[in-house]
Image 1 (spheres, rainbow, N blue to C red):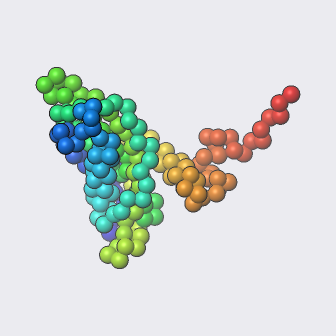
Image 2 (cartoon, helix red, strand yellow):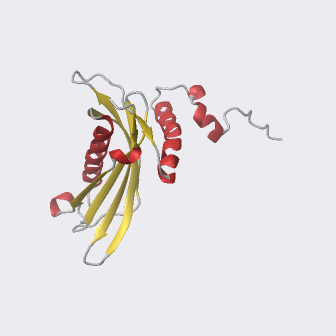
Length: 179
């Protein structure tokens, strides 16, 4: 197995059209349907990076900026941002396009985490990610903070051990006493 892979090697682009069965009563794409598509595109990116079966471990930071209307074409782009022992963080961006109106907007962004597993479902080591572009470097550098935050919120890491988060929240400093 290759010990390192560039982030771009995991890039996946998926396109869907919003049909009546995909919408809510406002004729917008249902959030659950979009999350389903996001899970698929992110899983494919994680599989491309690891060359393994992958399972979803976390889905977080899904921001719903704009509704996606019936008839829009939805483009989802996913790429592994960083790999840890057996887990991989995947960044997903979503665009909606109204082709007749010639309008395309970014509607959603999210980070999902996947774990590579062997045929028995046990976690297995994955290659490191090598970021090459400035955007890939920024996502790579932020991935450790996002991972530690996920683990703290899931109560799988003691906040005192989240060293990457200490600098953000000034956890090493003692609070000033109010006068």
